[in-house]
Length: 153
Image 1 (cartoon, one colour):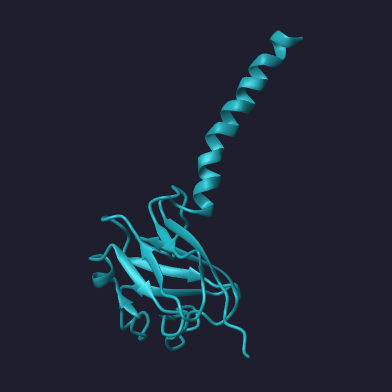
Image 2 (cartoon, helix red, strand yellow):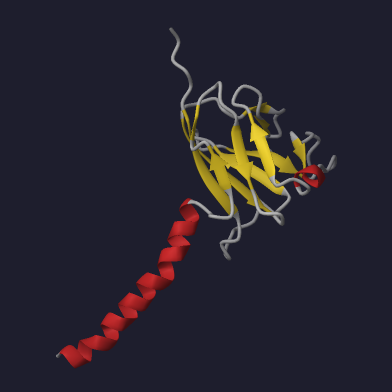
């Protein structure tokens, strides 16, 4: 009985070890750091990326909206200027974002630039070559940040 179940145990162990890095990468990518991990209105969020990274930056907000921060401007596809042009974003290894002034664009709604940090909760920042495609190879850079607005006195 032990001999027959041994291949199954080995298979389960191999699958567990193989899937663990993928699951961990979805939560946070070690090649991109967001500091601090909890920000308030008076803080500055710093995103640090490797030398070579994608040209697009976006964020999932706690309100389940996706806002683009850096992308390539195309007047025919979308007349809204990006907060950070893709060509500039590609040249930097870190970006500083203030909760008071950081902007994003909802390209699906074609609305003007709007404030990023409008609700308390988790924000997932993603860097990619193309944010409008699936990340099947898990190559996107990802980090999560909790935003806590200051309480009114």
